[in-house]
Image 1 (tube, rainbow, N blue to C red):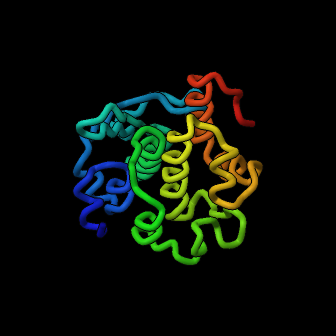
Image 2: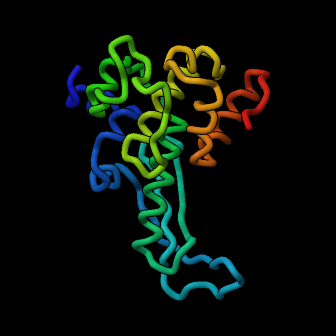
Length: 185
């Protein structure tokens, strides 16, 4: 399966492979007025941004900043995080590695080559890696032990990797609670 085939499927793989402009084309964009943190007065200009991904229930908004451009960047980041959480894919490891150019991260048997997940949350491969892990966890009813073993890492490393972005660990804990499991900390 080539990148262009993944793009046709319209799952997280597709949405995280395309550039931001194309992603925004797939969204309904609203600008609105809102109050700012710290008791500041309401804006006179609509600088807050709401993005709704078409054909999904994913809606995010950003109003943390007075700048519309900064709020748009924040909303796009939140959108990618929600895509990572809410959309699942049936991509296999080999296609995942090829699609996101992760040859150096994995060895031939499919585990992580250095035995550790060490991407920073700002790394372009952080969210795709999290989405792939979520696919594995979803297939395993959100358990972490089997996924850690499959990736050749410790449970602690997996949890600390997900903790880099608070929304991700909140999502995992919600899914674990639905399956009667304890929260990860």
